[in-house]
Image (cartoon, rainbow, N blue to C red; front, side, top):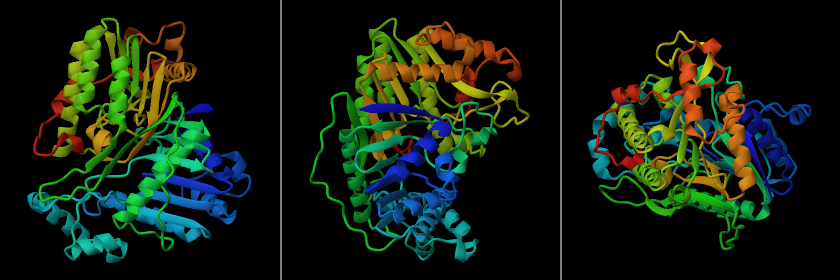
Length: 495
């Protein structure tokens, strides 16, 4: 059993490419975004004349490998750009790959009930008007159907990101595959192209078998809701074998089923392992918790952290997160839904600030160069976007995967992570992440202490970006409060 953490796409992309290329009999892949035009980064593969992910999967299929892929689809009306990207990607892969290949462009089967379609009829009408103004040749079949009156709102997504080769080894984490997601530990790309992420390469047959079963259930659920297979007729995958993993290496997942109803918006929960595992890890914390997350919006998690702070007066909490969602930072989205989502996070963080006091470090990273962009400025520099989903507790237990600390990842979306009770691996990852963020400011310091991170962040904030020793800066709580606006009509799990 071997765990290898992959920090940023500079490590994650080549490792995933090599895993895929190594498949001899079977390759299973489930991704939110996987662009076939993404350039390969592995020298071994590019030296063979392969240039893109489309080339790589076509090469694997030509070897006779049985390939099954689930690409997440999105609501065709409200998330038109992502929806079209999913269809375009799936279509390009299907065109290039031949053999025993199955590619599904898969929405989650949950549909909003008629009450929500009625309540949102004004917004639906506006979005449909935008679609009518576009070239019909650019529309997908689902968008054309929506214009003819078949509007089906899809509020839930398949958010997981993993690949399993030969049922024996895998890469699992938060990293999707396109040029936007590629970044290096130096984070010297434009801010909107920075992408801090963490994945885990797992060499373990039992864990990979469990992840394979989860893929099969994802695949079958997609077929049940009518998801199209772009390579012909798709058959259901067997799910009768239930593999058991070792006690120190567990698959953690979120899985839900469609739940019809006039006023129904969210799905029926089938597996909420992420919520249970996260609450359990927080509950057993005694000395320190390290978190990297894109969002912290789920009230039960904030509640658990507050209780942990009360139980253990010396418990330290270090949390790394972006100052706002990427659509707010880089697209200027200030709509009510963005503000409501941000209010959930601000309330959670404010509670943590009061509960932990000086035992808390709330950190947002930024590039070490000045920025003239006032829209996305953090203490004079452009933020580094944190997309990781990592929790490490007491150098004893850790979790890396696709689930954010929000209600959507905990209860709605399809997610997958690896939870590992291997102290050496937990400590190794914590130290690597501390060094990546703190640089020289980590030398000779106990980086489990919140004050080390807080002092480094305050020191950096007082300096010009070019004079900073590391990426860490204080999270802008005051700005978050100003941007936040509660809109309680929709369930918090949606955000």
